[in-house]
Image 1: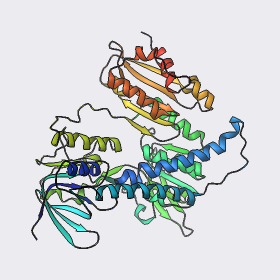
Image 2: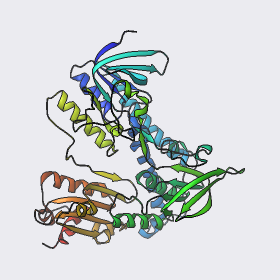
Image 3: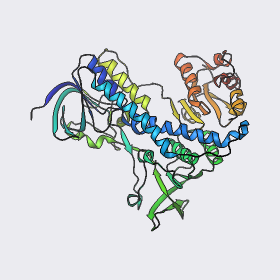
Image 4: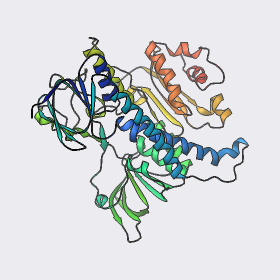
Length: 463
């Protein structure tokens, strides 16, 4: 079979691959986009979009349960996971269809569905989902194949019907008793969500604290918030064995500080990390290098060790966020087509964990500032001192910023509170524009917004 020649081959229609393929095609490049599952990638199909619809439903349940404090007494309410799932499905399918149609209607762009792998340096073989194969060739090849749930090697885990962040979204009934393996972003979002739906929830985290990459005060406050909702948080703990009894209950053997105990659960969610999908690409045929975990190695312009082959999004390692994947696309496109010289060095890395309240983060943490030996000051303001939080009846969490003592520049911020991501974004804009904390301290914000309390946050910095 003679390979068909293209200007560009894009493997994976995720948050980098899809817009890149469309832009390359619009720039006159003959482009083919290969997707093995659904257009939109993890974000649209089983990540950001579906999970945030469920977060919204869980928030509604929480508000119904706690509305009496605001003078609104709700005698009873019912969580219908079937309807919650249908709403999620409708939103996801609508987004997926829209993205697919946009790709199909783009001139110079061909969209095919199948499993792609290298058969030579710049040659790709595709096993089509509907049968047959295609042989393709291009000078530019872009890899946006993403990552999947890491399944730890725990005795008996493969013998039970465990859940992942993908399969849990297909449930139409609320689990009675859910065990979450992993106390990080995915695990905590799902753990809190299902507790609000009515599940009994236990979270196991191997590290000494939840979200261990965050500062200790953030970790402690997050644990406090979850435990206030009767979530059983066990840190320094791990499951070492699973077994299913005759009644269908899952018996987990949990180890902590050398001691073992057995607990029963109805469901187990594995949320202990992600692994790249690079193993499906036969990268050895192209000579593309990966690290010891399988992440594709790239330089600051996202090019692999093979000229003309690029990796974007989660498969290259680093922060696994949709907005980083999308930014990868903009860097590659602007460099190749618009002849700019952009790179990934020093780009901002904002993120938001959609627990309730949210955790919005930008820049460096206090721990990182200390490790780097910086001359810094920490400003901290409890949400109980934020007027808007008091008025809305939710004073959980706090605002925190790290600033440079001499330059007065904002080095980083963590906002654990209502609208934490939005408040963080205000500080990100200040950091991008070089606006120092002393200017924000006396800035005129509309009253009574959450962001207005950035005045009070920086009033706490002693010059």
